[in-house]
Figure 1 (cartoon, helix red, strand yellow):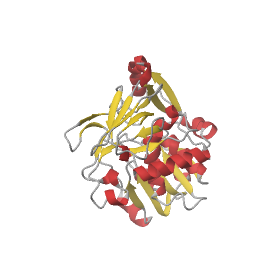
Figure 2 (tube, helix red, strand yellow):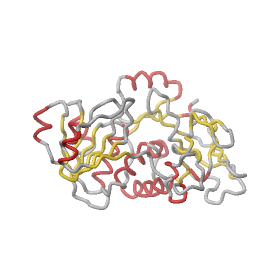
Figure 3 (cartoon, helix red, strand yellow):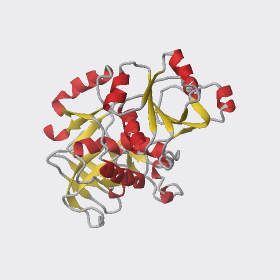
Length: 317
């Protein structure tokens, strides 16, 4: 059993579930993307009740008083604290979801729609919203019929393909691995595939895309991908390589290219995304991992042997 305890300003809430799920993202041991069922609420909690299915994403707290917080951009607040490996403003250490209990604030929780399986809804709270927000804020959802590219076909990339198709775009997956082609087209419904290590394919698709979402966290140059964009195209980066990203200036200037970054999304955006996923039945592809198999899961992550998100079954502990 797991409990999610929401606290801030006399607010507390306990969540307990017959099954509670937490996503295993990488060997850095991420502890977010947590879902459960409410078993108790504090006196100041009015938007959740016992029995509700709820999710906790990346954000644990923010100042709630700055321009960003007041315009539903709390995830960019200077005082934002993540749900794991951090210290909240009241001195509370955040440990994330690898436990049978978690403390959180109801203002950073969202309802999980009834027809979305909890274990599959969990990755939406970070992986899903990361690509949804980046695409939405690049006006991709308002103009169907665009040609969009997705660099990388992992936990974020496969969700970008699903969202792109749901919003009526022609989606091209761009990968360094030719083995991803069948997966991208046959399983996920992508329209095309570019092997980025093949100069002929890259040149043949020069200036063919309106928008590219870069989901890769490994160190890489974005220069070759800029060449794939049409004039006035946009490259949105949501991956976080450990080294600075490099790119040539001339293709950027001559193509009037915009390069932008994006991180997760606001609570309001997560709510919006959940409604969209419920309406169009969009869910991540996952593999459930019992807690006693976590070391095996880490070994497989190191070998990139996951399609596309491991979800830990905390209740099995």
